[in-house]
Image (cartoon, rainbow, N blue to C red; front, top):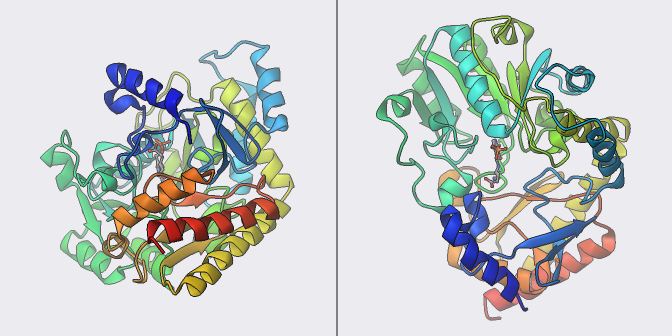
Length: 431
Ligand code: KE4
């Protein structure tokens, strides 16, 4: 496959941008080789600078749940830009967006718009600390909540691929206030709580993890966390930046029936534009400035163009719940196809899957936490990734990521991906 234009661009990019990319995972460092530079996309396809066509399994790491260049969202953005781009003043769309989010997400009584998932999670823990008067937080190894200092401790996603989960630049003071526990391990949470009684402001987790690869909560885990937080006065925060509006229109909390105190959102909420949000119980959110004393602000928060895209996306998802049964069917078809291939080739690689999220792990261990995810053969994953790319299937360039399906994928596309998966496994394993 000719990717010479991408290679030239990557050479040039590295002169001006650290690592040549504006987000580390895009650099292909976890899989080797030179990243393809994307020029355009439509529906289930993306096209690189050399004109190569790929079927898309990243969908911008989640946002493009309806596929790329959705005409309805494009029209909403086109109409909005006729009235300028940004005011830094309250607008009608922000009210409509807040009302819609409150109606869709079970835990949210009040919500604040920000510009990224990172801003949402940073703000949520600040509010939890202000509300409780406590300093410490609990997070889980392998969960990624953006690049805020408090979270770059045993982080997942790109941080995990670099083998430096505890990033330089995070102070000892900040690190001391972040306690970590293994995912799906309630007993370890109980021990942390007992050892830090009345000092823990919040417990934050991905209710379904995407950032160590896709990992599901085990039976009773979410319920157990809810119980511990209720007993200890700890604010339970579901980071649904990835799962929000994806696993159901009310996210993982609606699908699993466990209601957190605060929820963070991103990705799908902006329809592809830079949008994040945090919200939850009014008694907690009322602590946010200017109503309360916890400060948080943003020049482009609630930006009218981003709100137009986000409103078009969320209104569509809210009014067309059949999207979720389609995505469920697509995820089931794809992963059962993978299972058949595993059996046919005599392989027992683990596939974790829920709805339109999945990860194929190059391990035969049950993947339920970060150590088991890290038992995967990363060299083999790299070979598989490139074999898929060579066949025109564009996956996330890391074992520690979930893939995301869109409604633009037809059965024919899914069959193609299943076929390519078999071929890529044969290439990677030299079968
Ligand atoms: P952003 O700041 O990237 O918008 O959101 C941070 C974030 C917070 N919480 C969860 C659960 C997330 O998955 C993310 C970001 N996800 C990664 C994908 N693993 C974004 C991709 C990237 O870092 O380039």
